[in-house]
Length: 295
Ligand code: HXC
Ligand code: NAP
Image (cartoon, rainbow, N blue to C red; front, side, top):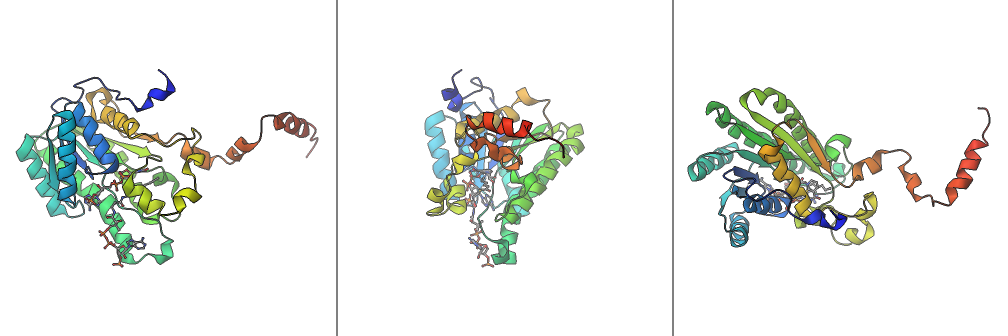
């Protein structure tokens, strides 16, 4: 396969047939791309977020393209009661839920000392509380009804490295990763799998305008941070997510799959900066290093 084909759908037709999949934050960005691909693969998809008009528009758009109904349900994931309503609406509509994608998020760049406590709360409430609210409500239902299921959490690579200027998001995503790994063990006995995806740079309006507003986009060429020198294509992430919620990945549990073109490791390796040394300089450098005698 040529490198140019990375943006093609990967799984065979019908791979998610009859699977019922709930995607939080499914009306926009990466959630929408996952919803569209899951629907193409035969899944019954429920998309949810705070804005019902956005959800309805996305549902209609996907239906036109896949001829497969997508069910929009308004829900603020930070409110447990609303999450219980989402569960009830999903069961009433499709009779079961096979997979939950905790994808909803809130984030913006800011020096931490400029944040009010409410600003910190709002991010934690969407990302961490939203994830545990959905996981708890759906998990209790699955366990009580002896139904097997899978949960896929969308985190970030700074869930384990941390990152300046997005501290509430980093703290919340680290918590989500801890939930993923903890429940992968605790709830495996109920047939509930937990995995996570840590995306690198995938252009979306929601993330880009809050993380690189205005001129910052031109000032920092983020592609330069990526060893593969490009950003991700939504289909690449959708392919991975579809695999992780499909039965093909039944033995994968507790994993976090990074899909970032090598970006975070590039930032981590102490000598990675040597990539900027031109090839022809290496003969000279080798000579100098070999000439060093003693300590
Ligand atoms: C400082 C800010 C602020 C800013 C909001 N606040 N924006 N403080 N700098 N830029 C403060 C407000 O003043 C308020 O505190 C508090 O945060 C809540 O703000 P509201 O606007 O009332 O909240 P709300 O309308 O619920 O909006 C939530 C939001 C918004 C998170 C602020 O951006 C949103 O709806 N985001 C959803 C989509 C999103 O963020 N997507 C990006 C995901 S990208 P006070 O004290 O004044 O009341 C991602 C990872 C990307 O997660 C990784 C890329 C590599
Ligand atoms: P996005 O389009 O802004 O998606 C975030 C979604 O979350 C929106 O649809 C939003 O819809 C929803 N949401 C926010 N608060 C909510 C709440 N309280 N209840 C329910 N839904 C809520 O951004 P994105 O880039 O696609 O991000 C998707 C996921 O990928 C996030 O988890 C993000 O952290 C992760 N990620 C993205 C990137 C990237 O490069 N794009 C990189 C790493 C990780 P409403 O406003 O309608 O509620």
